[in-house]
Length: 237
Image (cartoon, rainbow, N blue to C red):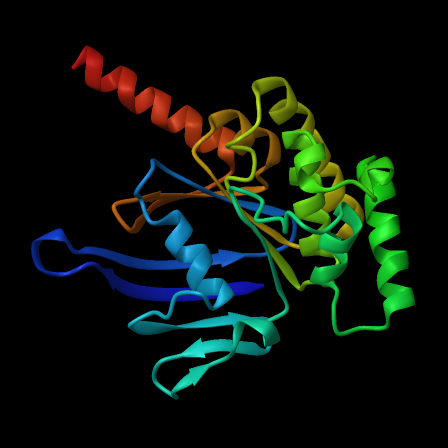
């Protein structure tokens, strides 16, 4: 179980925004849902160790990532966190396999190759192994980025709007694949999106973020139904 209490001021003076949340993410896929600028990416960055909270405590099981009271700030490389960014961030001079292996560096090369091979097969991209990023479609690039993150054998996987740069048809296929990959790997996913469709299809739990705060939490379908009823009541009032 990820448990994160985070308070962070972003910017200064009149332009400052404040992230002040307490979120928990267990098994399955937990969706952080909300409009652009709500603070979703900042929360992921704090969990990963890229962004340091001003105050708070972040734990994953018994592992303490961050505790401002005790002066703990575990380096990102030791947190056991995988991260899939919006824009893939693949190395252009490396093949797809080399990009994925980069995520697994530090281990035994043979076992790393086997894990990457298994992941490529699981995602149906085994034929891309020797190609470079510019030779891949947007969907293939995103699958390679996902394989690279999973090749580290993470304890939790963070995904920051991973389908924002692909077309609608590819997004639909990838959404279905993400759900299946999570089921097969059993790695908890913390997934950022502002897409209703992705939230409904993927989320076991959804946390609504707005203005740097948690506004609601629960099952996606139930929260969307409540939100729809509230809007209807406002229009009829």
